[in-house]
Amino acid sequence: MTRPVVRVVGSVNLDIVARAPALPRPGETVIGASLERHPGGKGANQALALARLGAEVRLWARTGDDAFADEALALLKAEGVD
Image 1: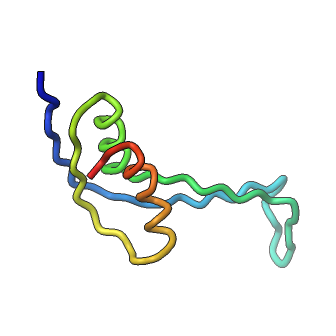
Image 2 (image 1 turned 60 degrees about the vertical axis):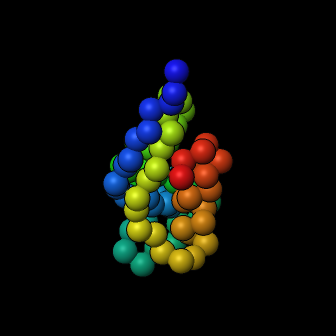
Image 3 (image 1 turned 90 degrees about the horizontal axis):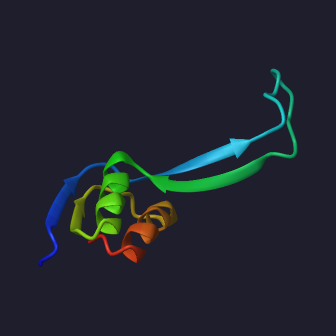
C-alpha cells in the first residue's frame, strides 16, 4: 500500500510564552519569569499530525529568514514534512 500524499497550505510560527508569578503593575518589573518556545501554526500542526499518521506531507507556508523560522521548521523537518 502506498502512502497518501497530502498538501497543506497554512501558517508556521514560533510561539514565545513567558510565565511569571503575577502580572506586573504599571512601572513594576516582575522577576522569576520563565520563557518557553513552542513551534506551531495551524498549517504546521496539521502537517505534523498527518506525517505522524504515515502520510507523505508537503507544506506550503511563508516564514521569515531568521533563527525563529529555523526553530519553527526544525520539528517539521525532523518528522519528515517537506
